[in-house]
Image: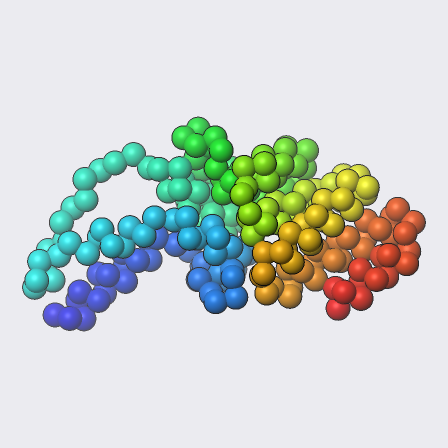
Length: 211
């Protein structure tokens, strides 16, 4: 009987986090295509606390009252689509979230990722800019700024890419994150922008920091 209760509980908990996303102590979760930052996962409602309404024998689960999805529900849905490489449906989910909460940093950031992965770079830059404008801390700002840098780089707007990536790296360092791969990626992108701007020495220094 205990095994049955545990099995049901695990199913319910599995509904709360996008497929393939596992929370980790290093500040980010680890998925197959995307890493969902813990600052984002922490915003997700812990609905598992409300879903344990079984009788003492573990034989009956009370059906929850149907309710419209919240903005964060839709952000979770969008992130699951991102992980699966379904960028169009991810975009739809994030836009629905923004219809509910137009100042959601998480939804704007997700929208930027979905657009960037469809090579819609100008729109991605706009979304990332909105995400930064509604962010209240470096931990949730450096990701969108890094996205802006990547998008500017794809558009050959190297000065803008340099500026965005420099800010992203600074905010990353302020956030206290410990993600060597993410930091190295930003430094490599910065080095590319600097090289294209003819700032060879600075580009070499950025590559050294990238490891």
